[in-house]
Amino acid sequence: MMTDTQEIIKDLVKDRYPGIRPFKKGESELFFGRNTEVEELLHSIKVHDTLVLYSKSGLGKSSLVNAGLIPRLLEENIFPIDIRFLSTEESPYQKIISEVKACIPEEVLSAIPETFRENLWVLLNHWHRNETPVLIFDQFEEFFYYSQAMQAETISK
Image 1 (tube, rainbow, N blue to C red):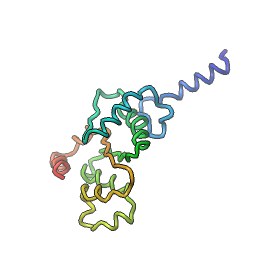
Image 2 (cartoon, rainbow, N blue to C red):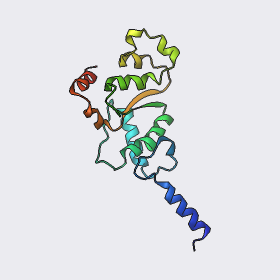
Image 3 (cartoon, rainbow, N blue to C red):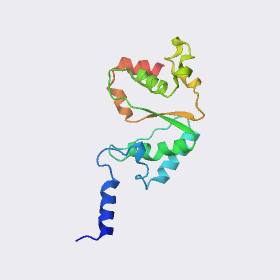
Image 4 (cartoon, one colour):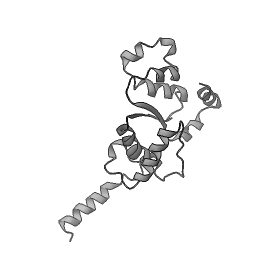
């Protein structure tokens, strides 16, 4: 028979890990033990224009970003914009534009001439927040499921 303390510990340990799915942004209080990696990523983002985080599948990259890095970015006045290429119905470039536009208030967006609202450079130059925007491409390998024409269009823009 377990004591009350053993039951509590068992419940905490059982609920500590989300299973095979990655930790979500709202689960940062459950995510710990990778502070060094989070701080290294944060430093790299501040110092470099581009950062690539890669490793074998299943090693916790998405969890590290979602529950570790993103909360720290917000603390540092950096605004993360999550971009995932989940379907090939929308071009990758259009997916990026859609995610950035979703972070811009309608009154700011409507002040941009309509012909420029699909231009990433223009949208980021009209960034209204005090935070610095950072584009995060999780599961970037999904980009390569798009046609070569869509990939080329995205890269050229």
